[in-house]
Length: 345
View (cartoon, rainbow, N blue to C red):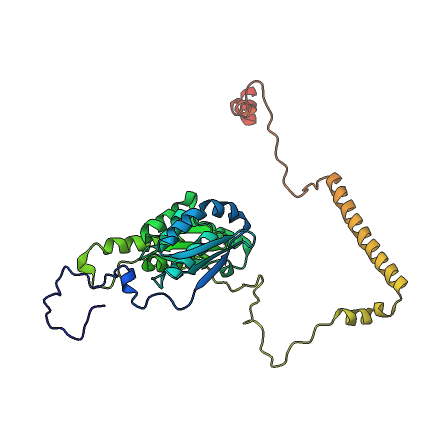
């Protein structure tokens, strides 16, 4: 880490020197020599991984031998073990080897898992099953991480520069610490019903803003999208809402409703015997049955009833059809009686 308390110019401190670079740990850096005690880690793996691990174990052994880490595969117990040796010089190598066997147990391919031994690569296994209670809802939200044909998962891998594998109840991720932090946030929000597409849009905008050196010291909140929740209120609304403003206020509570036993005591049914109760119930059913039959009989009779005639309505006059001349025209042409009398005299 660069020094900040002494700001005087130094001849060896030039601009081309990367002050934050972490150099590779070599055997010469381990001045103390061999470790005082042996450190070991063991991880169980499921039954279906047994065949693959048996085939890929030579590759894992060769990768760990470079850091002088011993590893064993126990197929009977279903366990993988890594431990330090007298030649191990890097204290962090055993921790990286532990992450390798963890990733192998979570169905990560062996060529990808052994990349954990490189500097600058970290791993994170996110447990997602306990974030959602309902099984069907959990399966749907886990599918959102993958997306259609794995497109959402591929976009997350490109934006975060991490390897992501969704397997069972966990999500395994490999990459830089910054990328793993973004992956964990996206996965946990997806299980909390926030779609990953919103985070993908945000990461794409940040990726473009990083290219502009003028915005390096500015706040990016004004450029990032802000999505509002569109979910309705979870409060249960009653079906029938009563208007309380019409009711007059009374300080006394309403009378208590009578229970089923109280109603039976009032009707006398409570004191009847078992046979009498059954007889009364049977009579009640028969009475309801007779009432329904009478109602159906009336409906059937209504279909055959003649329609009622309206006697108060005025009768429409029928128009006669005439073959020849219209009689109204003939009356106009006929002479008046007075004119006929004068002519006869």
